[in-house]
Length: 133
Image 1 (cartoon, rainbow, N blue to C red):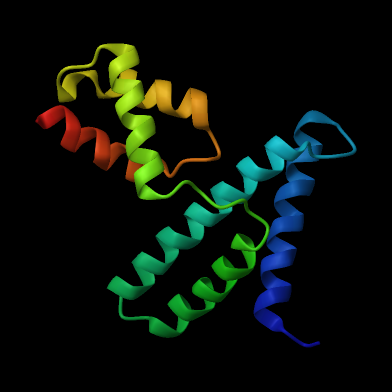
Image 2 (spheres, rainbow, N blue to C red):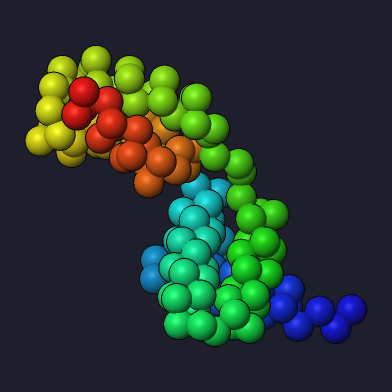
């Protein structure tokens, strides 16, 4: 349908999957690995959008935003803030964390239990607020 941005995003996804298959010599990409790859591509797009916006290149930021929208159609949605806060609180209780110095333990517990379901940045912010008091 001559949708250049969508085509570009899909080609990027395909290239990332092919690279992953070549890395381990397989014929397919398992679902968990595919989601990890898509999350990485999503993060790259968000970083590019930020950099282009700061650099005054709104035209390039818009292209990245459109590609991000295409990527996100293939990703499961992440937990909302309330759910993330509950998971953070459970991880704090489980690890016995009491200060920001224990952040690594808390994030390890959250990411181990909810990888692919939680926004790491949001979880980190909530955990820092909780641990600071």
